[in-house]
Length: 256
Image 1 (cartoon, helix red, strand yellow):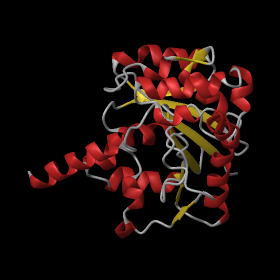
Image 2: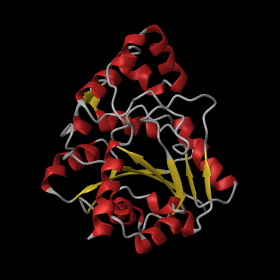
Image 3: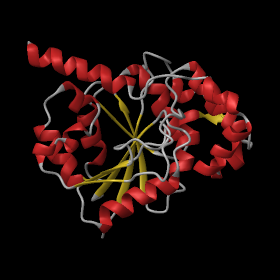
Image 4: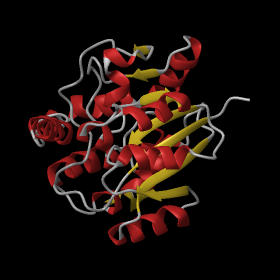
């Protein structure tokens, strides 16, 4: 019997906005808001938070457990190992990777990624290559077998920290697929890495009210931006800042 597990990675020690996942959003912790949206995906059978064993994440783990979601704690820096641990023993053949700083994640996109992976017999699917959706709506789906292989074979710092880069290396031979959007919305930023990001996300949620915002989709949020175009200028940050920094660490590691 097939099972799909959503693994949401989060930690409190963010360098750009520490404690961001427990900031208030819609009358609840940001991570709780996100998990409620993930729960609305039809193809997700179980959700687990993957956080670290570091004491800084004690409050996060306790909060998520109190909300009724599973928690796995593992390495702070080797996030690939943390994912492998979170998936172990849960009986899932398909995994969905989400990051805890994306509270507006769209359940429909999660379902589409899982359907594309299963329907085409793929190892890995992303809606981030090419990047056409707003930053903050990124979804990756992959098989448990692919994750287990990456855990053994991936060596570079970026591959261990960001979980899936090894799955995208052509030489690894994984069967990959992508979900492209109808129009390019990649300039929109709905992830939360900075205080101004949080201000934008709060404005989008407040436009509906907390409960209605839990049910809002991509197009609902786009209509808010159409009505309030000034929000487009609030948080002009580079996409994937953390991953680009990791690539620099890869270069240093290979040069050593």
